[in-house]
Amino acid sequence: MRVFVSVCFMMMVILPFAGNFVLSKGEGDLVTFIPVEQEVERGLEAFLKRSIQDAEDQGADHIVLEINTPGGAVNAADNIAKIIKASDVPITAYVSNRALSAGAYIALNADQIIMEPGALMGSAAIIDQSGNAAGKKAESFWHAAMKSAAELNERDPKYALAMADPDVDLPDYNAPKGELLTLSDQEAVEVGYAEGTAEDRTELLNILNLEEAKISDAEVSIAERIARFVTNPIIIPILLSIGSLGLVLELYSPGFGVPGFMGAGALLLFFFGHMIAGFAGWESLLLLIVGVVLILVEVFIPGFGIFGVLGAVGIVASIILASGQSMQYVLLAVLIAIAVTIGGSYLFIRIFGYRGFFKKIILSDSTKTELGYVSNATRNELIGMEGKAVTPLRPSGIADFGDERMDVVTEGGFLPAGTVVKIVKTNGSRVVVRASK
Image (cartoon, rainbow, N blue to C red):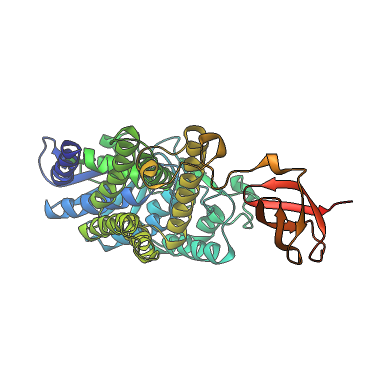
């Protein structure tokens, strides 16, 4: 475990600096190419922020965003747009295959758009985590954002709105009412959404009048690849579920085994990826450790649940601080993780029973008669004996059975003193009588 933690710590320190730019030979101006690939999420946002800053520090004269994405998270796209607009270096969006949804929004915020022949741009409706249309408030924001991005470079906003709003009617571009607009390269040029088309980088540089420029390629480091994977909205609840379920199941297993390593590894991967992406600081990791320690304190030193509650709050707070996602999404991810943990633990207990740590703190022995645990012997030999009530039985009292007086109880009725009674049932120290006929 110490080796595992040490390796993870070294990765956190070393990997962020692995792989920045590869400079090719050339003369004149410097052009930096930055890939915008796969889904748009917070990891991509962190990569673009670092890459654009590095390009500016290197004195780049032009930045080209090579876009090929199906879209993604709106909050990440909005933050990326702010990064693009804040740069003093001219930025061109080169759509090499597709710039859909959030990708179209990113392209519209660049200074100009060049498309590869056959590339597509558009289809930018906003949807929620379930794949359904988002609420009116979110849709209103997104429509305004698309319109503003189009107007940024004096493009006709009706096409941007048609990409996001199916109620906009553009039948001439295969987007009648009820359909979202997706522009081909030629259509984008026709409506003024693209300044031209280019087969490759050479043709692109010719269009930009940068034929003799040096080329610098921004490369995604290994750490950033991990960060992009970990910060994917689909992966986050999976990692949290594996982390919490693994650690809980480890308490049922002797020693520290596979569940523990899986749980610890998933949580470390979650925090490592978000730290590399720039969303989590050491304070969130420290808060997680404090939360775990408080829960352990509650286990060994019961404090009426106070330590346990504080520990749970600390863990949830550390996840919220580290995630870089909206509060609504993070709470949903945490609830999914809790549900998976409870369900998985229940199934584990049903199949394997209490084991490991819980076996030591939970009493599993029972005082069964079959095991020899008898508090009062049941005297079945007394059944049928007759005696006389010494005291009134209301319904309990004392009866005399020859040489022995016993505490007895009737079946529910009242019997006066002197009544002849008969024992009809015994159960431990309980002797039940009724009036003898």
